[in-house]
Amino acid sequence: KIKEIEVVCDGVSMKDFIMTQTKVFGLEKKIEERNLELSKQRSQYHTDLHLTKHHREKSLGLKSRIAELEVKLIEKNNIKNEVKKELCRAKLEHKKIRGRIKELTYQGGILASPALMYDYDRT
Image 1 (cartoon, rainbow, N blue to C red):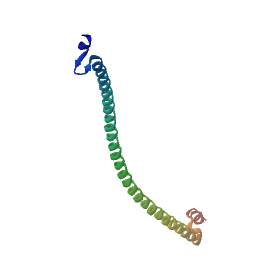
Image 2 (image 1 turned 180 degrees about the horizontal axis):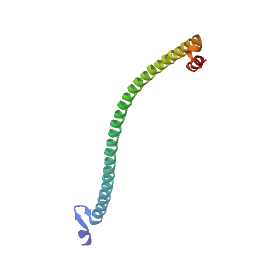
Image 3 (image 1 turned 60 degrees about the horizontal axis):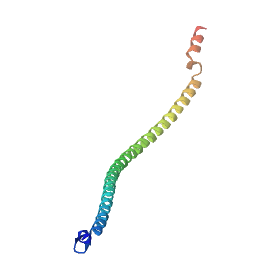
Image 4 (image 1 turned 180 degrees about the vertical axis):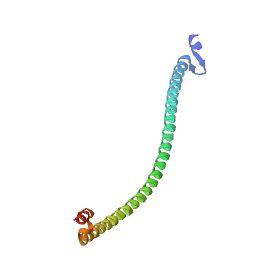
């Protein structure tokens, strides 16, 4: 009679049923853990994807900014070179004028020095 009670269905005993049920619970727990892990990985993937897009956009913005600044730098260097040439020409002209002033002062003798002329006139 005990054997009849232990048989749940045709050929399935209570012991087999409990063992199978335990295995099913174990497998359900594993599936839940893996689903949780997959959910975490999916969330991490989307976070990384978002950050990658953000960094790519930032990188493109910086590249365009660098290109603009390089163009401005070239313009500034051209201006600097022009100003340098102009300064050099001005210095040469200044040197010529100074030389001419010295030459005229030498040729003018006492007439080029007002203090000496004043002294000369008094005598």
